[in-house]
Length: 311
Image: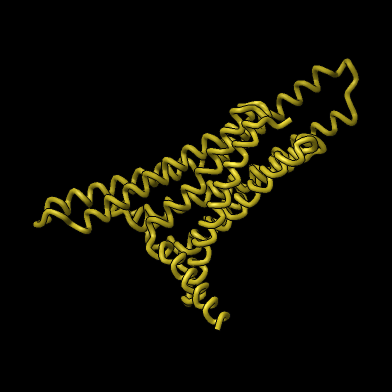
């Protein structure tokens, strides 16, 4: 039976996901328009379209999943519904983690002013590497979801065709080995995007801070717009990194069942996990003038159509 606290948490998560769906829709519409108008698709738009699309699907799925847990909780944890939702949850979350990591890597490569030859090589070839980076993300996300499918199949096989009493210890050993393999594979899949995101964000913040200090030493006036832009960029990158780490921890808690099903800890994690992608999306909109202008254009377009229809 779902408690009142669980219903409250799930309702908050649904509202947060709806806000995230709206924000991702704004980013997706703006980036798609840029690709349609331009002759070639920029690497930034390609990454942002992948990130916003995965976020749109993930938060739509989160909304549906929360509604299922509220209204059909008696069937949610049986008949393999919970396992299927966990597999889809794993794939969508890993995809978003990878795309968010590649966005941080792209920011670092394009904005940072480091001079090592490998960094310059990446800066010159990032446009050709982006499609392969995204393809790798899809493959890694799918691979990370496979252990959940395999582990569920093993459970069903042991349940439908139990081993004799003499082989009980062997069944427990097999189950233990499968869980160890599951944890190892998922840890590898989930730590790589975290490492990429943290390293690239720290390098970018370091580069922006050094560049700002140099500009301050050479500036003649009290207020420097360029310096303020660098401070704004540092705040944006720090905000994205903090949200990414919090989201990563919550995903880890849910995937490895740190909290028991239907516990208060699990529902708090669900609320935080719904809030972090939405916050990530809002930071992207706030930090990009093109994204900030998109709601104004949409509102103006709606008003123009409304006036035309009324006349």
